[in-house]
Amino acid sequence: MAIEFKPSPSLPPPVNSVGAVAWLRNNLLSSPLNVALTLFSLYILYLLVPPMIQWGIVNATFTGDTRAACTGGGACWAFIGAYFEQFMYGLYPSEETWRINLSLIALVVLLGAFAIKTINKFYLSLVITLVYPVVAYFLFAGGVFGLVVVETSLWGGLFLTTLLGVVGIVASFPLGVLLALGRRSDMPVAKSVCIVFIETIRAVPLITILFMASVMIPLFLPDGMNFNKLMRVIIGITLFSSAYMAEVIRGGLQAIPKGQYEAADAMGLTYWQSMILVILPQALKLVIPGIVNTFIGLFKDTTLVYIVGMFDLLGRIQAANHDANWLGTTVEGYAFAGFVYFIICFGMSRYSMSIERKLDTGHKRN
Amino acid sequence: MTDRNMALAQLEPGEEAIIEFKDVNKWYGDFHVLKNINFSIKKGERIVVCGPSGSGKSTMIRCINRLEEHQKGIISVDGVEMNDNLKNIEAIRKDVGMIFQHFNLFPHLSILENLTLAPIWVRKKPKKEAEEMAMHYLERVKIANQALKYPGQLSGGQQQRVAIARGLCMEPRIMLFDEPTSALDPEMIKEVLDVMVQLADEGMTMVCVTHEMGFAKKVADRVVFMDAGEVVESNEPHEFFNNPQHDRTQMFLSQILNH
Image (cartoon, rainbow over all chains, first blue to last red; front, side):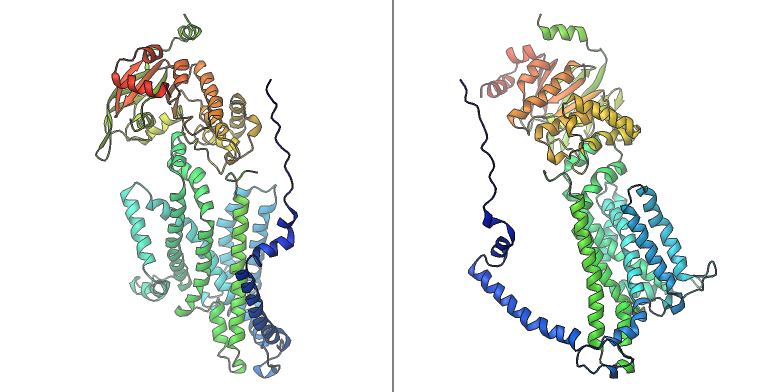
């Protein structure tokens, strides 16, 4: 007679392998070397953190009208307060800045609407990608519905930084996807055009492209035909990062097993159907870290527009440093710029991680 | 007369050839993979293709829905010649289901979405109808309860059965199997073969590349043996296994049957 097989019951893990103590033991104190490194790090923190708090908070001055008001020996944050509006909006007229705030609020509301289940996500995406940019443009530039015209040369500060970053990101992503698909295409013409474009753009520094956009292109255009410098700079930044984006996405496309392409083909899906429904969703998910890397790089690269005479956040801060009333506040200005860039870039990076987790289907058992 | 032959007689495969190879040649670079392949498959026939690895059997079956291009000769499927005409290829692919060795389910879609994708986008079926049909076929391969899971959560045998259901959802006239059980554990091979036998009994035209000789004996109308890019021998299973004509076939069979 056969003996019945009964699997043994599962036991809980030993107590010292879970919880805070285990975490400490595994991560900070797992070997003599790690104990030494932990102590060394604590010592470095002890050296750095207290003086920073002393300078930045305890001895700092938060209000005042000139550098003379800052007498505490610490940071002079009053400088940031006095120039805050310029840092945020550039030279955009004070009484019109509500237009920028309104469009920002509208964007946040629209993006937040994605969380509402009853809303059709497809139409919402159309509104965000097609309707919103037009509305926002007219809000910013004015000239319609009795809105005062605000020249783009007055646009600046964090507003300009965000505008360049967001438009660059939104425009370079689809362009990058097309370039990546083109580079892997079987059609010789499309393929060589994409390769030449990508390799040329990647071989040139962004500063060169910005100079081209702001100084040289107007020379080539016929008289009377000229378009806005901001527009040219945005196009330059977009083309530049689309080349990098294309290579990142191409990496993702190459990582998809050949069987996925074959299965899609074998079902009778057309090229675009199989790309959009089968290949790209997988490829893009794989390269989210690389895509966000490119986005963050693009966002920080927008500071280079300072060189062609546009005053983004960093540009405004550097200009304000020359104010005779606030001499000697360079460190505070840069600390503020660093803080703002950190918040935004760190936010993007965390957001990308949450997307990755959300999209992580299939490969894991649960 | 055995039961099997009785069933065959009742089914009476149609006379017209649904797949036809005429002097088909294919090269990978300098390597001559397919050499003068000639044969035709009738509607309702079940063909098993076997042979050592590298003999061109997978390449041959993949030429049928033009996952591989041939350079010389004519392949016609359902009366349509397979050439560079993309419209023809897409039309044929709608009617020819294919099952792969590595399943090739789409890992980012749930099982149900895997099944409804092609019916919705290629056959333009309404979503609801496509889902009902998908559930029907999942029922048939006995994994309807897994419909909302993702492929990565299923075992290999379950994944291959989903792949078969996915193929059936397009209501194909022909099913191609490219070593459907080669990547599976022995315990899972049976569950997949059972589904394939069931399909064969319903009269589906099938071309199957496999090493499962038991399946060939049980189901095939014809066994095709390939080596070095050529069809060496093609015969009905009883004759093929008991009375092989070529010494190459005899050697192959002695190795595969006596291990």
